[in-house]
Image (cartoon, rainbow, N blue to C red; front, side, top):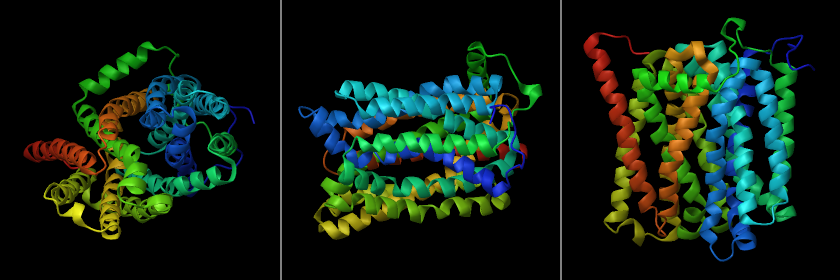
Length: 415
């Protein structure tokens, strides 16, 4: 099918949500399914410094942040379909290269390129959502997308462990290759071009700088970009530490993928809950409640470690407590990701593609700067991670709370 040709039968709303979820899942799957492979990668490619294997996650996220700066302008110039085709093609080629990497440095390079290509899937998912919806409807669709999308990362570590057991860690990249081709084919066959011809812009990188200035000069977008950065940073920090915390510190061992899947699956309901509540309560109030709950719960759990109570628990109860807290963290993400994105994008519909790119790049790039120290600070306990998450949640809560107070003083309606 030509890249600019629309499908004969437009997709139904539920199929649109599933396609958007698949696009988001492509990027997430290449992170979560890699977690069980980190010990094997370290043993084969970096036996002298096993901690370097964590950068397999960081380099991927760094590449995705840079990639968003390119694919947003491409989407606004050549359309959503062309932009996704280029990104998915690069993702597939980088997956092939990573499969045959003979050094940890080569693997880092291909993972950076892989993340660069995967950025198109996230950018296009956000852009298409903004093309078709706005305001609370946009937040509702984003939340439903998150609900479906979280099911794939939920099984990703378990799938990764199964692939490793059957064919070794390199085979994971073959799966990425197939996944990328399948998602691209579905999008091209079923999704029409959603770029409004009136909003088509010539491809130049200068508009990226202009869009970045507009994002940073728009108070609402600037504020919720900051909220997105701390939210993204704390969550990637959790993912970077998850394998070591579950398998080593808390004694889960081979049960790590199963427990990770359990946490993600239970938390998938947060997207559905948000899609119902956001239409009645508004995005800001839900985000405030989510961050406030994490400040309270995270602080209580951190205090349990600092006072010496949690370290005295047997492995079973200690692991159960960590799983319970992890569910609250994932649930918080389900109540914030779609809402924060919608709030940041709301004033930027006229530059949706480029704005999504700038917001995604800044939240990913600056979020990695938060996540990397959290992962590298691992000391055999959850204390460094918990400290970072409580601080990030406090910052997010403060930003949203002060916005709500300012709007209430001026009598503005809470969207």
